[in-house]
Image (tube, rainbow, N blue to C red):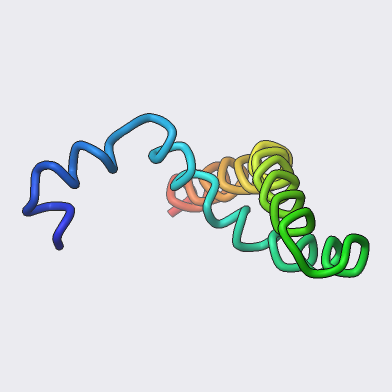
Amino acid sequence: VLAQTWSPLTGVLSLGPLRYLGRVSYSLYLVHMPLVVLFLFVFKPGPVSAATAIVVSLATAVVFFYVVERPAHRLAQRVRRRLNTSD
């Protein structure tokens, strides 16, 4: 609600990088925790494991978005269109 009513926040949230992050956010949600745990075990808790987990999670989420999530959405749309035309 605040983003819709306060124009400075609307402008910030409309920036390209933040919109892109919003687009891949579900993929990030899916992949981040296993990677965080992995890097905690590999590097032990601290800034190195945190920074590595952030960078690798973002990169993995982008790949996951293009390889899994986006094709799955397209498949679902094709199935929906086919089901709607057969009625």
